[in-house]
Length: 285
Image (cartoon, rainbow, N blue to C red; front, top):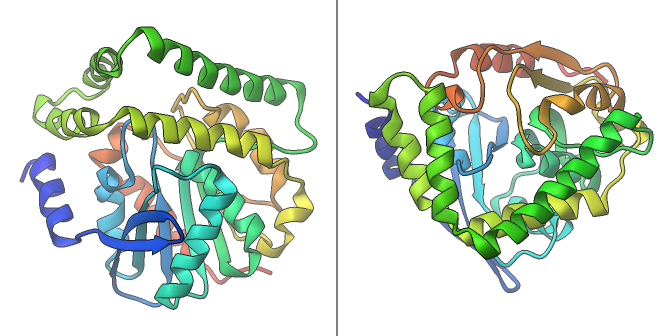
């Protein structure tokens, strides 16, 4: 079965459910078996979490998996943590493991900071962070990210998103050699809207403006933090902030993966193996 056909089967099998809190409406998926609940936030560029079903499906065999579609009217990342907390309460979920990539990793840090008793493990990949003791290179990364956000806001005034989509698809086609696997990327890119982009930029900027972490903020996690890294380049920090992430946590486990954000949509076997090894370890205090 082609990747795109497998994806369509996946989203038909695990349908989105509604959740409303105050004036916010969002959807979520919760499925799988097992006691552990893993919140997966893989949103990156034009690809929502569900596009990484090659990660989600294997993990759902022994765990319950929660994915989210954020409300488009959310104003800042702190509000988002509050909404997710209310969702967990409504579902009777008292503790979660969070796997966050790209701006999903930023949310993972924010939620673990705001609700420390609800997070038992943190897994991050190619994500943004901001700390009180960043080196000069990392500080420059943050300034560059803010510049990218501002440039995108200005760019959209003169260049429609559809033009950008075409360029982005060309990048994907360069990275993915098998033409039979391009359908999934085309589908995701076609469905990405200006509202999606505005929300993503708003959450990234809000994260930078709101949080400046220090190691003491995550002492409750002990050594139960896994950081994936590789060759993947991301305009919003990513691999360039690995050193800062490592210094933020208490001896986090580091795992190199050969994949990038594109190939993980096609084959995530390496990541799954290392992910499961980590979550099956006895938690360290």
